Image 1 (cartoon, rainbow, N blue to C red):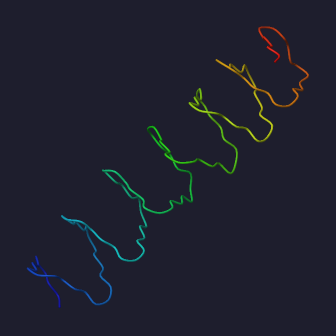
Image 2 (cartoon, helix red, strand yellow; image 1 turned 90 degrees about the vertical axis):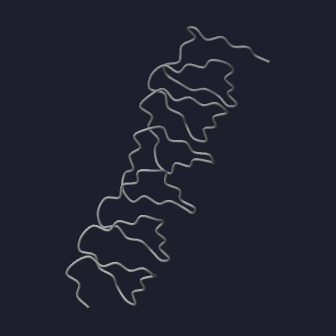
Length: 130
């Protein structure tokens, strides 16, 4: 079947086999894909994107606005923060933390092991030993 002009189908169009569209494809309603979906070019989403299962990104993701994580966040490699980080709850560090500049603590700071440093000074440090 070859159609040179517009084609209207009033019922359901079923295609047994592949379907190739040489130009743009516009879908006015919902689009459901039962199997895998591959996109060779860029994918642009104008609304919200909801992922029901895991999300895996092979390249470097870039987020232009705020990023909210409702559950745990696990970072397998190094974490670098360009601005001032803010932690509302407890912060736990399992390895050796490294601070290149000034570290400010606004409230209590608990140390459960010894402190070693070749450049540690007592200026503006108060120790309350219990």
